Length: 105
Image 1 (cartoon, rainbow, N blue to C red):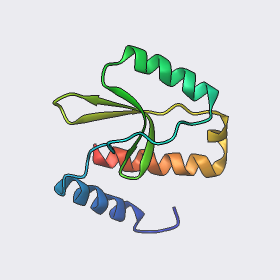
Image 2: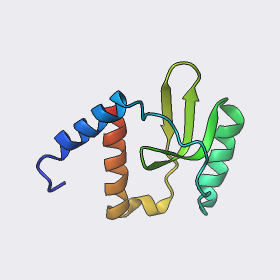
Image 3: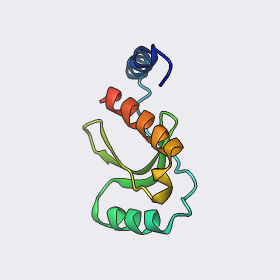
Image 4: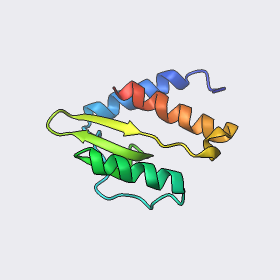
């Protein structure tokens, strides 16, 4: 957050991603989290929500549960935060991810 043009840089990256059509999920899921809480919550969501998938990557960020709304181009990220998300470092990572995804719409 010490970088003064951070917001401008993120806006430009988001603009370029939209223009180049880079706004799609990676085709394969990443490794499952060892978190028992995340695993149980994700299984419940996957059983209830059509089109939901787990541990997918989008623009370099891992999404705990991604929900693609068919035919709309809308992607919903559901984050399941275990206790380690309370650390200052992880909160910073989460905040940067959330800010960037928000810029993408």
